[in-house]
Length: 286
Ligand SMILES: [Zn+2]
Image 1 (cartoon, rainbow, N blue to C red):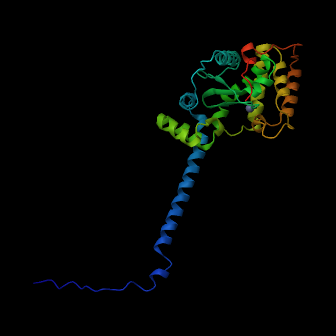
Image 2 (image 1 turned 180 degrees about the vertical axis):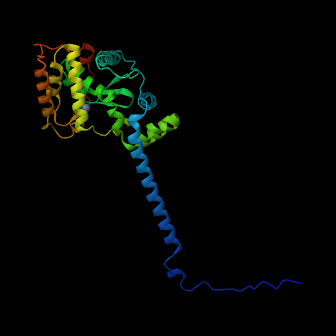
Image 3 (image 1 turned 120 degrees about the vertical axis):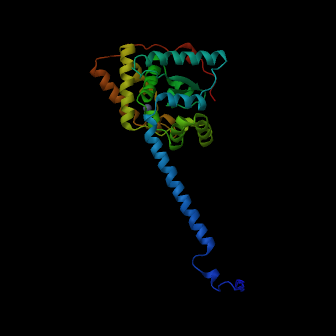
């Protein structure tokens, strides 16, 4: 028995094909928009989750990422090397009075830019700009500044203030150190430090309190902290002063540490210790 021949016919496409609501291109556009939206939600959720997770990761995770992202070779120029060593030696003396968690260390470097600023970033890395070094008149004031930044490291404020990109990189680095560093570099264009958000007022107070306590422990007076707040830009400083953006209310904070120092009857000596020679020999402004 032969099967019946297949019924073939030429049918014209429906006349309303082009006017139909479910135009194939429109569907594709909707699909794309929905996927992009889902992706954006996913990225945002990952960023938020990473920012929550970052300060709970072991500090060594930050150190490993900082070594890949931030660390530069020790300077070979003798003047720069002496400056580097003087900064690190003072930071180590200050840190020794601050009861850092076991295994936590800070690394201080300087930046030739004339910005009046300093900041702490990933892995206990602290950077001081020459603009600020030029304003500091004593070792005690520099020690107070270092203590303030070390406190941000000690309390993991840095890890809590990472922008989404860097927080995601830090979390990723737990599973894929190389990949995470490369991704972070791509994301940030090498400017990892700029991806830090500001600290809360509460965190700033805590860092000020630690700076005061470390200064008292090291020198027996609060002269350095007071001098630090006196040389830092005040509220009426020109806009764009970097320290002000991350550290507002300088005047209020000066009043607070002065009151705290007075309460502890820790009056400053007539003269503070001049900054080490190596820290006063800065290259010309640029
Ligand atoms: Zn601060």
